[in-house]
Image (cartoon, rainbow, N blue to C red):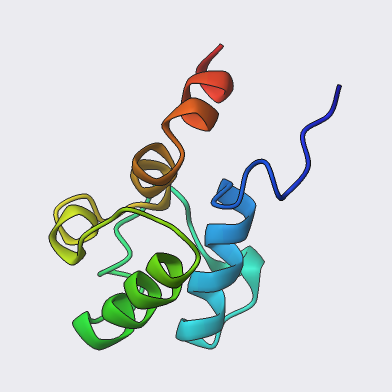
Length: 88
């Protein structure tokens, strides 16, 4: 059975979309394995994302994301079950 977005609220595709929005980029311009800091993400925009995702139930801290600045790593932090499915 296919999983819905409600079952995977922080899937990689959603993270790409949210980051693209705060960086004013198209989603295809965001590199998932490249440091988001190198792509223009600053601490203010990162905090914006953290607060948005916390409001939606994510249990994440600013420092968790800042120490692992790629979307691939964020996906694993925000949805560990989804990351293990992707590795399978």
